[in-house]
Image (tube, one colour):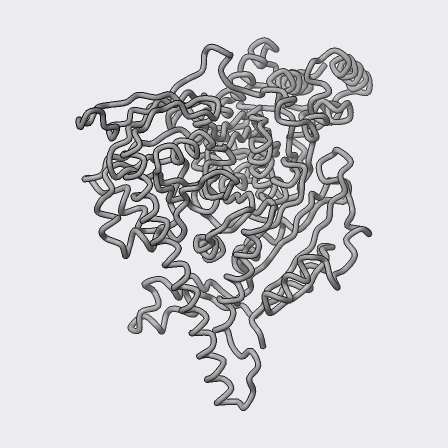
Length: 621
């Protein structure tokens, strides 16, 4: 057997043993040994393979899969396969988001043999294993390497990608590059392929994980196979201290839940300042201490802001400047807890508990979603006042903002009527009100919502009652690859996903609309808020009068394009709306194209039908 086929097959064996369930493949010749090793695994149901033409989209699809699997309580690295040369570099944006968003991504990059480095050989980077920055670990494997060594290195690579439960910044989940030097011949002989497929059939019959790939997509959480984490009795721990003036600040946590922090906030009456994609932003049946419009409260209610003494931080809150200023305030004690806080035993020291008139430390433990603590009645009342002041302030700002927007919209319509003699919707002035109304409508639905950066996520920040399960790429808060990430999220979750995105972010990932004919398409509805350019810059410092001459050409960059033709070209159902009422009808499927025709397909490889549609929210003309 050729060295390349032998190494590729050992990598495939090790991936199955390491419980990797999903591999995204971008076509290429140098990576062919991995295709011939992984393809039979997919045919046997041991893994799922997903093919994308573009490496950049393949990387972002893998990101979405990793997030979706984690949200389904399957902590598994997702592998992505590329050929050599610049193909590897095209993964860099997704690798960076995986690194700073703490998502387990395993890059299997095919390379030329080391002897061809620094010789000017075709598609050969001098040290390809060093191309991708910000990885947790990097490996460079020679074709012909001993099988035992390959198995050990693959196991180490998957472990580094999945990360440690409760790990430090360097230990949490993230990207790993596993570079493999494949030499010719790159394809197995008929006998070698037959021998391998026979072995795979035996693995499917004997491997304990053989049935988990398909079953896990429909299993209840309690039935799912544990992918990573400490053994019983070895549960790691985290500690927080509650003082007077404590708040919880929460950002995106990469799909991790935070029920232990929700219980902590309820028991100790702690205001929760949560960004939309934080698990703490979603309303539950239980008591909630979520503060709507918290950035405005921080910025305008100095009495509440100055009373903060301690901040417990979960996830990555990066959305607003008032929160950034709070976390940078040296007078405030900042305590950061791991993203996977629910996998830990949380020990709480409460320095506010009063006994006999004296303040003492009261230590409690939160584990398994249960709060075990004693809070004196007087302190609970004081805490209740503290959190109620925050919630009331936030609700007040939400109501005031809605009234201001309504008055502004009415003023715009009146001015238009006076100048044109028509009372119809007139200008881009109404667009933001419509976009906000649509965003709040989506936030209130029992659905999975993936939201883009820029204005889309900021509109959500004003939502007071979030029922949707919201995800976002907040590692570096970029606007690229979001269509592919949302598709991967749908495939990882095995359920429909709504992508809320602006026109500029949509244009950044047009390639993500293309799904090869043989591939599962997911179930994705894209809601495009098309205000013809990067309107977010109009609300930043770039809109000052003395800079007006530069704003449109260099920042907002209007393009004058809609998405109807792109939808038709890529095979997506399409509808255009200009009002919130029209959107609700289109979202419900009234008057839209039938999604059960050629677009119907398997969402996740489990027999669930999927569909693809684009609803464009346009400026009234």
